[in-house]
Image (cartoon, rainbow, N blue to C red):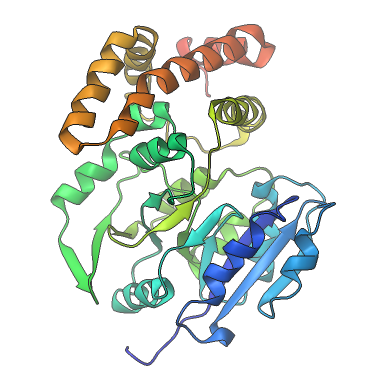
Length: 338
């Protein structure tokens, strides 16, 4: 096992990423891992800056056009072209942290042949915004943080294995107790996921993982002290723009053809009601934030009431003000398929 190196294929969609692409690719280049065992499939949505010029300097980068531009369609191109045994969902705002990231992941997949998926926490760097440090704390958006605590429950019940100082929790995921896993360093066994990604139509990143679990490939690993930098946020205005785009284009616009089992579980309506109440009356989210801030000695939790309040306002407005949003309300509360 020590001498075997599985090949990594990184799926990397880009669009005008000249400011971040070098750091992203350097983090892969500097890994203590055979260069012939790593490839980056850079899927370009029509960049007009120096993204392609910079990426072309790396011998392990293969560049493909993405006429549909969306990263989710770019993953289909990557899945078709990948030659590695392991398929990594990556982004230009990601960096692998440390020089042994690939080695650690490689060991886990070699250790247990039943593992289909591996993930690790996202980190904010010292150069990131204060808001991005809050994002590191919740590892997602405020809604997802509130309604899905399944990972913590799995970790409490799982046995931990140790690989060269890296703690790895290995467990089976119940499709009815889903995980919100999908991007930013998520590693799949290529043979398990290729056919799912290549299906016709739109598949969001979380949908792919849910489909995988429902198909029976439910053994996963979570490495608690392996990390990926996610330089996700520069400010609240940018985050609000992301919420609007994702909600309108990826959720409302595509929901009827997506597998949303990762969010629409049997308790979703109840949890959604409590999240709206919790977020619209900030005293509750403020008390929650103060508790975590004191317990973890981390002042960035104080962004939580504001972020929760803004997200519920954005989602509520977009739901009420759009035809697709109003139709979703009818489908949700009158028993139709979402």
